[in-house]
Length: 200
Image (cartoon, rainbow, N blue to C red; front, side, top):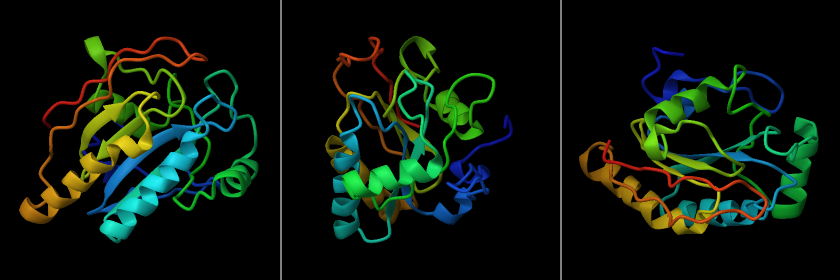
């Protein structure tokens, strides 16, 4: 989707395979995460839910998380959309939206993720998503303002998210500078380059 300029230009599939227009999120700060149910990072679902609830308590209605199941990394999310939904709810009490299973790389990659990778590439301009539970932050104007690797704990992003919400309230949602987490690697994943996050 070469002409896309904001988050609101996309309608990824929901858990039933129907379009989920992201225009419905206009004005919100959004964290986009590619997830998996059988990964070393799968316990991050608990951190994501904690983050979602904490920000909602402080800034009601200003933030959401979009989870996108993906089976491209080690076949670690082989279930159906319904099975994935049930797993997330029963094991981690997930209440934020979990959408349909997608690809994040390759010829069948979901256009939303192609856009995110173009807007906020990693070190040396690398655009590929390297593993499950990478995270991208979109401000209230629909612009990508941060991208973090799998190793970054969801809870560590709360201050950055709250700053984006406050900035949006003060000056119409202008972008803020966000910093990526320190370099580290997942024992089950290949080493991943430090994600870049610059002033948009």
